[in-house]
Image (cartoon, rainbow, N blue to C red; front, side, top):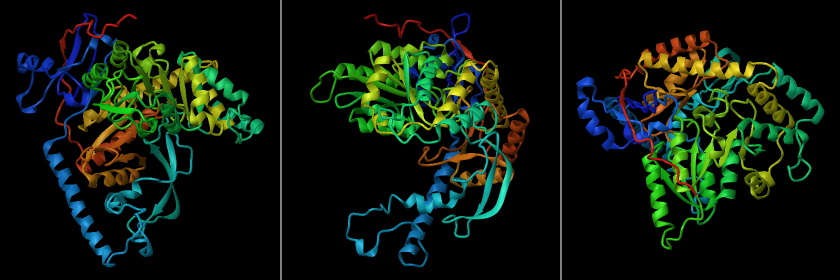
Length: 567
């Protein structure tokens, strides 16, 4: 089991936990091999575990515990076998479709265009038509209510093996929602946020019908950006109408040819697309692995650009606050230390962490108690904790002024809708306490309590859970392809709505269910959901975990490894 704590207790030592998967977290093997021999008597020999110390734990002022338990060998073998059998049957069905024995519903080239360059890549669609279609009913389910702690679903049925769906006219009532990114519960149709949005809609309307640079810059936009800068503790900020475009359209404005982007291997698709569109050289480091990142930084400084060996114009490190598929939290203190040492720039995507982490809900920077000024480009979205839409970029005033005139999403995109802006303003004031209540603080605290409770209970039941103990994104491993669809269906039968994820969104043997915890969930709701998860887990034999969390060891570290270099 991978435990990656980075703790600095009062005695200055760092906690060490058992069961590490070093390639996932990034630890120096030489640090733990000799240490493992010295403490071998602490471990049960039948558990085949590795333990390691966190890298430079002295940078952390609080426990930092993440777990990525190894996939059991038998489960991995059966998972590969499952995909192999599905692939064989897929080729058999393609053979039957080719000879018109079985009808093919997927888009194909017209017969008269068979000599053209293909518009639809037949082989690339193999997975879609033969594997995804078998479990397609687990996605795109239409809801007909507010996506709060509970929601209503429109029931649908398929009579052609998920190629098409028909609505039955029945509504599934009061489904416990464990799939929406409604971290603080602001996705609601009652309360101050909804009332303010309705009032602004009556005054401004819904659409602006212009860009910010023309006549679409409202006073509410200006107020929102000033409030956002205050909330984040930075000089300036600007908002965009789409979270995905905030990354994909702004990274090309910040980096270009002759620049180097160092990207975490599991960064979101919007970050990957933005990096590719920029024309920069892209190098990928292992997920949350500081040794891998430092190695790339050293090579970039020493060797410079390929062929010419000229220095890079700029080096941009791109990371996320919470990784939405792994549930892990960026090792931000170490990233900042490396960024300062090698004089690189840091782009931090806080789409899932803003509002959901930190004692004040200010994101991963607040979570670690760091200075926001140490992050050069702060990015986040309003679609999750704020229950709205869009994204933002924040940082120094010079950065924001530059983006206002150089970012495609700022110059060409239509302004944000006034009621959406008002939802952001009201929810943000609530989190900050500027509404005169403690509702926002209470929700931040409740989310943290719900997260710890839910993760702890799942581990006690014997499920393999990925990610950080404080992350409200909770991936639970399913592994086998047949269990992806089965888990989603069985949970819905018991009135629990969940998100299931498989290849290619995850590695082929790491299919999972992803739970998103909300402050709106009551303890009764969580207990009901946990009871159902346990029941379905027994039914589908999903309780794979073979390890228990053991008492930690300690090991001192050098506090000055990442000391800052003065200008």
